[in-house]
Amino acid sequence: MKIDNNDEVSTGFSWFRIVLILAGAFILFFIIAPILSMMFHTPMGELAKTTSDKEVIDSIWLTVWVALLSTLTLSIAAIPLAYLLSRYNFPFRGLINAIIDMPIVIPHSVVGIALLCFFAGEGLLGKALENIGIKIIDTPIGIGVAMAFVGVPFLINSAREGFAQIPIEYEKAAYTLGASPAQVFFTISLPLAWRSVITGLVMMFARGMSEFGAVIMVAYHPMVASVLIFDRFNAFGLKYSQPIALLFLLVSLALFVVLGLLVQSNKKHA
Amino acid sequence: MLRIDQVTKELHNFSLREITFTVKGNDYFLLLGPSGSGKSLLLQIISGLVKPDKGRIFVDGKEVTHAPVGKRNIGILFQHYALFPHLNVFDNIAYGLRRKSVSKHAITQRINELSDILSIGHLLNRPIHNLSGGEMQRVALARTLAPKPLVILLDEPLSAIDAKLHQELSSLLRQINRQGHIVVHVTHNFNEAISLAKHVAIINNGKIEQTGSALEVFQNPRSEFVASFTGAKNFFRVQQQEISSHGLVYGEIHPGLTIAYYTEQPSEKGYISFPESSVVLTSNIENQSALNVFNGRIIDIFARQQGYEVAIDCEIRIFAIVTYESLARLKLSPGNKIYAMVKANAVKFIPES
Image (cartoon, rainbow over all chains, first blue to last red; front, side):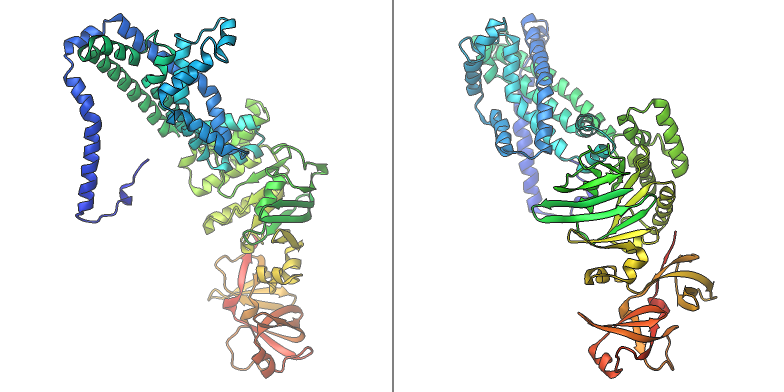
């Protein structure tokens, strides 16, 4: 959101504004301090050594590509659902919106258990998948399923808001010019909501990368970065898990800076 | 030809009832109504964006009631143009042609043709947000015209623009109409488009109150609503004759009958109107300032909300509103001779574009 300088009311000195600034400073400190503290307490030599630890690099790489792939795969269905929810009135729409938000409010260990119940060998789908040779538990597929489950609400909510903000006149105009519903979606709605869709994709991807609770229950191995950090911490303590945590943090930040720039450049075109 | 036959639509708090009218080939049809009268809904039904509950729609003799939107040979110009912000001018205009799988070469050809008519050749590569209001209007018109629809629906196209653009667009619309497109123009303000219209329909509360030529409808409103909505019972065609050195214009509204008025847009032909409340009746015309004095005979007197409406035959028919007191004092009754006076300042001139 852009706040125009003209929108600011000049009130002169105000104690309330001081309180606002102090509150803001506290929150920023609360977020930044632990991260900085981790950075300063990690010897650079250890960090350098970690970058050549194959297990660490493999786990970070696994985290990135599984999160990316699960985001893109689910988006094929999630984006149309978001469009449906923003454009059409139908019974139980409110209920469907509530269901979509469920993964955000369910504790993630509970998500893990639920996924196991469904996908594990004796589960509803597990058996069927096993019969055709697809294993979910302890595989990258399982990791992707867990990541997608917790992340997909962020994509749907953001995309739905994006579609809802497009003035309906554009779509009407396209229809009167002879476009089919699918053409309206692909040539008008999706390009106009692109910014919100990209933001949703980035948020879902980020949520997937950072997921721990649901992933560890579905797949302890192969280890994603968050599980590896937990594993090292459990086995060897803080000192040994710290460099991996920092490296994972740096990779995540770098990724999101790049994605953020992509969204920004998209804004300019929109 | 566009024929609307008994079109009915029930919404939860509004209904459009048995709308019937015909717009003949090459007609410019003005659909006039206050906001909330159902005129925009009717446009959406004609274009196919909304399905009617009952009734039929024909374009050029072919029924299109159930034809998909965009396959009816109907184009619509939206009030705020609805140009696609993510496409440049060329791609906006080409949008409808691409949906019809027109070849690249033919698209370029058609766009060049429209660019010449609408003088937008220099804008084709520009993004939409770089266009001025007038440019947007012409681009939107080009986009609507590109697939060559027989019928063009205009949703209040002149309501949010300044006088200069108004004039420009009016003459473009006239030109388009002359090229053979049927135009249906929806508005709440008759002043804005009466000079373009060949036929007029007045819509109120989901019903067509009256249709006919502009003169028929304005001079002979068939309902109280039409009379008060148009507010233009004293409505005449005028042919300009001379302009005085002070800018006063004299025009003929009937053979031998002239009227004086002021206008900032002098034009050979047009319409004039003046409110009934501005007409002063007197039995004696000495020492008064009004330039327009019509000598006639009272033909009828009707009670109205704000007093009495007096119809006077002075070769043309003039209507005045007077209070009960004036009616009694002047002893007005049908058959009496009377003078009707109208100040030149009260006369409004609407040029024909």
